[in-house]
Structures are given as structure tokens and as C-alpha cells.
Image (cartoon, rainbow, N blue to C red; front, side, top):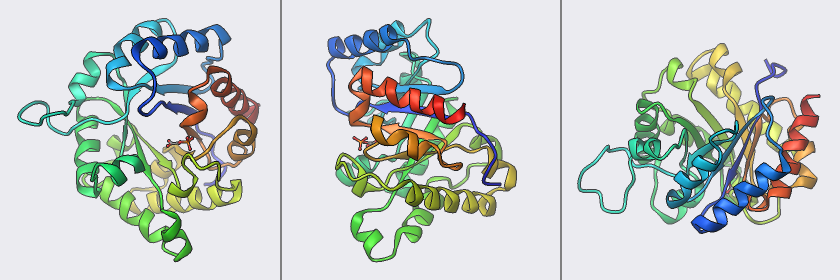
Amino acid sequence: MCTLTRKLLIAGNWKLNNTIVQSAELVKDLLKINCETHKIDIVVAPTFTAIKVVNDLLSKSSIKVAAQNAHWEENGAFTGEVSPQMVKEVGGQWVIIGHSERRQFFGEVEETVNKKVAACIKSDLKVILCIGESLEERQSGNTFDVLDRQLLGGLVGLDDNDMASIVIAYEPIWAIGTGNTASSEQAEEVHCYIREKLIGMYNQSVADLTRILYGGSVKPNNAGELLSKPNVDGALVGGASLLASDFCKIIDAALESIN
Ligand code: PGA
């Protein structure tokens, strides 16, 4: 079970960074370095306002565009929200849902995360569902309880077919933006746990096919080691995705890990 190969996915989460002009520059830099490849999936997630420009610039590229969030309703009195259909309208094919920063600062809980995942799937968007424990939760021995809750809660009502459009990102909160990455052994242990959990929730085939990314201070100098683990199927990259050369080095590390 632990040795099956899945197509790696490297996703760059730009968070609240880059104006439209800066986003366009970053994409042009990525295209100039020419790090795209059909051997792995590559996704970038700009702010909502830059999605269209980024998508237009990537129209001939295999790099796909993600939104960093989407609401579960298609329209209505939900001031400040953007729907999955609106993400699609500007060219987004992926959405990051349940990022720890959204849980921490914007009150997202399992129920809202689940509604968002379901709405995105219904709109034919692919989802990167983020889960992960805080330092306190890890130190108190609650890592797996937290992951159970977030995984079960985030996937309520989603069936085997839906799972084909879902990627799980394990992002320990203590590793995000801190420079303290999880060791490759820690990541592999948790990824194996998540995969076992998916067997129980679904079946062996869903567990085998679902990609599980690692996120949290992934950099050019640690990507190779993390991606060498059989159950680390890619990376969700924050800070290092803001510099084209670093992001491309991480893509190179992913390519090396499959060669
Ligand atoms: P980081 O962010 O790579 O800057 O730690 C990862 C993330 O939040 O997705």
C-alpha cells in the first residue's frame, strides 16, 4: 500500500502577497525558467484579484491556477465572499480549502470547511483540503485526534468519486512560516496514518489514489528529502513559492525524486 506511485503535485500558495502586476511578473519568471513538466502537476494560488491575469499568462502552460478559498453558496447576501463558479469564471481549476490560517484567523471550522469542499466539487473544481495540528496539540499527544476530526469533518458526505478531485495537504501549524519543517520521518508517519484512515473511511483504492501533500516551511534545501518518502505525494509551498527560482528548485527536487 505504501509504495504505490501517484503523480506528484507541487502547489504554491501565494497567500496575501503580490499585486496583479507582481503576480504577472512572478508568472513570467516561472515561464522564463521553464520549470514546467508533464511529469508532475504544478498549481499556483494567487489572490482572487490576480487569478484571471495569472491564468491568462499560463494559458499555454501546464501550470494550473487555484483560489485560496471559496464560499459554499453560488450567490446571495454573503458580503465579501467569492463562489466556486466565480473562481471558475476567471480560470481557476483548483481551490485550497481549510488552510490553517483560515481556521485560525477567519473562524473556519469543520462544518464550513466541509460545505466549501462539497460546493467546490459540485462545481467541478479540484480541492486541496488542508489539515494539521498546532504545536500545543502535538506536544499534548493529540496530533492524531486533531487529524481524525479535521479529516472526518472535512469529508462528510463525499463519496469515492468525489475523492478523485480531492488532495489532502498535511500542514502542521508549527511548521508553517516558521522555518521549522517536520522531519521527513514525521511527515511520512502522519501521511501513512492519513492513508490508513482513508482505507477505513473509503477503501483501499481511494486510499491508494489520493495524493497527500506536505506543507510547512518546504524550501529548496529540504524538498528532496521530504519528497523522497513514499507517502509524500507533493508539497504545498508558501514562502518559497514567491520566488520563481526557489519554486522551480522545489519542482526540480520533485522531478529528481521520481527519476
Ligand atoms: P510556508 O507556508 O511554506 O511559508 O511555511 C505553507 C503554507 O501555509 O501553505
